[in-house]
Image (spheres, rainbow, N blue to C red):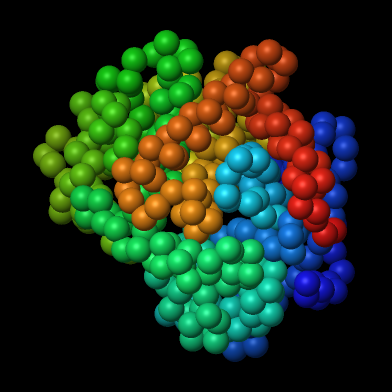
Length: 417
């Protein structure tokens, strides 16, 4: 097996997604690097938290203000997501956790060139150790196009040696990506299906009916848009959605399908599609929406110690990565507001890729949604039961569950640190 390149780990401070027991220090990642684009001065980051069977998994994001500390926390979160979906009877073999990030506004004219040069710079890692794909600010089509221009076979080629039948697996995944469900690709819907099922599991455990339960969603991109669709179709009432222009609200419920059809490539809604009864409010109004459920599905650190006081919802479902800062979560918990953590809630996209590639499911939308719903419901229910029995937050319960599974994965497959 190829030996990973030697890179000095960069210790970081407090993280929100570290797979560790309470009271222990966050371990340094296996690989932590910073790249500087010589043409623009923009920086990019790659963190490989750990390898399992020599490979790691985690998306690539692009946003202005992205930092190495942020990417480090996300990489640790990916280690947890992989562990939380470990099924000894499944064909999908958990990988290690990793993440990439570029500190650049994806709307800038220079952004695509920066992306290509970043991928070219980290090409040896993608070829051998890091499987990646779309994350905040990037679409999979864009990542694929840039990867090809950077000389890569695929953004997930590092996993190919682990497949029993590479040709059949790649064909199955390509067929799955070609599936369209009512105007939206299956690959875009998979993660939102998992988020929606997390919401429904929490409601069911609390005995709250789906019909009419009000939801506010921050972000109408890939994850937020798909989540809004699944929740609306389950009978919930989406009363607010926020994008970069502001918040669109309607207490009687928004026409989710119309808004989805009116989005641009960055999830921004054309206001010409709004109905007369829809209103526009400032960007932060989604937090104050009169709703039982808030779904932050856009940027990290969206809920902090100041704006958490505006929230009256009963549940916050983390569709984005690290949207609630730890200090804010403690204040929310003290007010009886439950936060379902990102490491479980938004893990459906990553798991769907691997379930499809390894052959646990075929290239079929109904089969994919059924598998995602069944797996996510079991996982979220297990987390909520553990949180209740141990008197802790769902995040602490998810961390504990991952900490239980990581040694089991290591014993079976090994890992490299």
